[in-house]
Image (cartoon, rainbow, N blue to C red; front, side):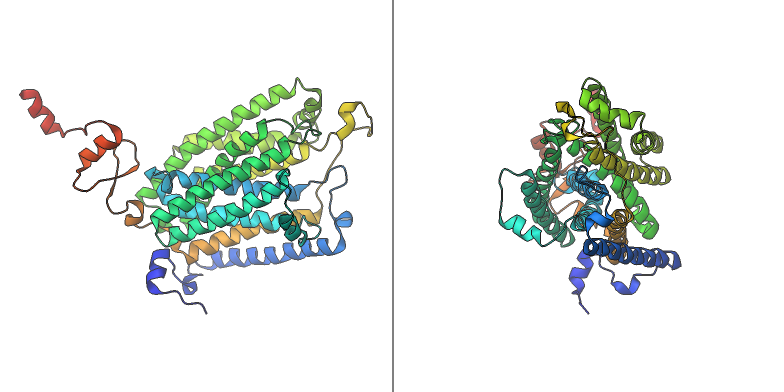
Length: 448
């Protein structure tokens, strides 16, 4: 049995495994179901690896990337978004976002682990990853993706450890490095698709930028959903500061949904003037993927969450829970549609080669669906475990405002007083203005 010193346990919020099943039978049942689902799904995945992909997976030579790649992209996109959203508070000093820092970084870690577990089953031989990293090709976006996501995982782990240890200076430094590596890795992931000149739907500079904005939207939806779920497991976490944080995240998420809707509208309009892209768009607008696009991606992923979040005003947890859950489901459809869309048009179609009579089709197999479900169940399992063992990732007061600091009444950031400096002098130094005088002092000045 691993024992943690008392001081360390207090800093971490570690409550021990003895209190793990305190919430009751419902929590225990969910936990057992998730554990059983993970074991079953990964057993199915191992069976697929042993039997051979050609026999059990729905991918083909023409469509080599299927739902496993979609699940991987969904998880790492959400991880990057959670990292960016968490950095707004504890890295860049905007106080309303600080109470969500620990949970957001923890979620970013487990989503990344879940994505890697899905990708593992997409490799014919996972041991090839070792040779892949030891024989670099600096001109390959795929190799840079492996390196950058490895650095991102390390920086994210160090950041979370420093957050648990309440080492603010080092957690900010590690958090800044995690943001840099995460954005670099994620934009590079978009470039893997955007630099494939043979795939007209993907090709262009649009997707590396789109991936970053959609990641922030995904991270906002994830933190809203999982914080609302955490409030059911640990009701004490929903204090005044957490409510303020949820309101701030809600506003950010509304903004990013609007930005992604703007990108989506112009992507569709521009697709109408490109013959190759129009073929793909027609499949999603009126063809066999129309339900995925209109109901899953547009309605559940963008429109309804936007309406619900606006109506919630950042205070109605029930509406934010529903909106966050719908966003995560819709964003998964968004990633699935994106990955499949670039492959359904035959590669040589633009050259006038009629290799096939119609567009290509893809249907995920049972083994592929099981692997993706196992990765998502692993995320849920680790999240519930972390919430119980680490006491709901609550922040203590001195973690939000370190010694020598104060919350600016204007910008909401944390400012620090220099030696012998008053709060008013500090505000003047930071913002170049004089702090507002009390009402009585203003009246006295007016009389004079």
